[in-house]
Image 1 (cartoon, helix red, strand yellow):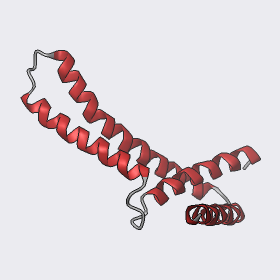
Image 2 (cartoon, helix red, strand yellow):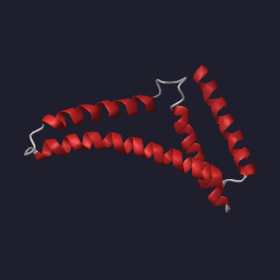
Image 3 (cartoon, rainbow, N blue to C red):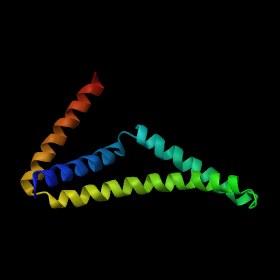
Image 4 (cartoon, rainbow, N blue to C red):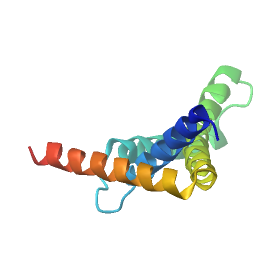
Length: 117
């Protein structure tokens, strides 16, 4: 792997790890949790409204469809980010993974330190 390939893989692993950390059950009130839950609630409301929507009211139907699609897109983006991280993790050598793990542990410790004040 070239140094650029390693950096790109490390970045993908870091993004996926950060996303998974956001969904750590011990921290359910993260902004990402809130965002996903809000998008999910909006999608549910839009789907319910879509059932009763006048099919000839094209602008309203499109608006409701877009509300539902927003949640689907967000969930898909998150799943793709995690999948890319897993793929990148497998392309890194054991030494590269060890180095990256050390960097991520240091970053997590720094984040915990900053949260504690």
